[in-house]
Length: 107
Image (cartoon, rainbow, N blue to C red; front, side, top):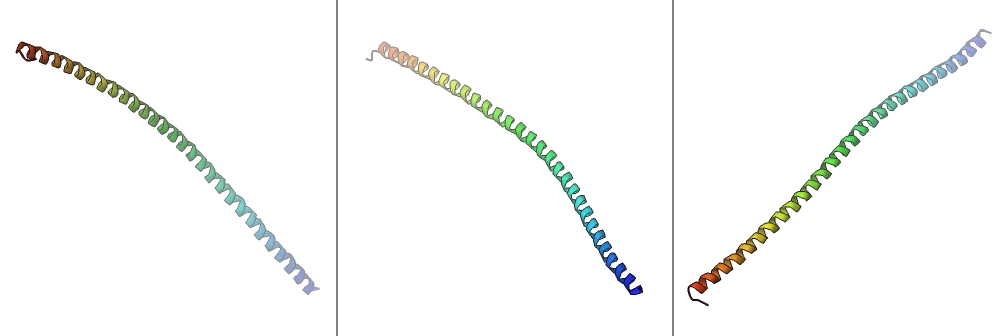
């Protein structure tokens, strides 16, 4: 009879140890999942901040490109005005040169 009790205790003890190990495994998985969820939430917050910064930088770059475009247009108009003035002065110089030639008696 005593042998039967020892055998019964041994079987229940092994099952109890297996149950405790299984519960420990489940609790460990739950804690690990919780830590991963917190890390994922942190990553999402960091990603949202980065997206905001990228959007801001994109807006600044677009404004700079637009400003360079307007500056180039203004510079081009200025160059065209200078060339026009130079051409007008060249015409005047040619007229003066022709008048001087006529005064000096050269055809």
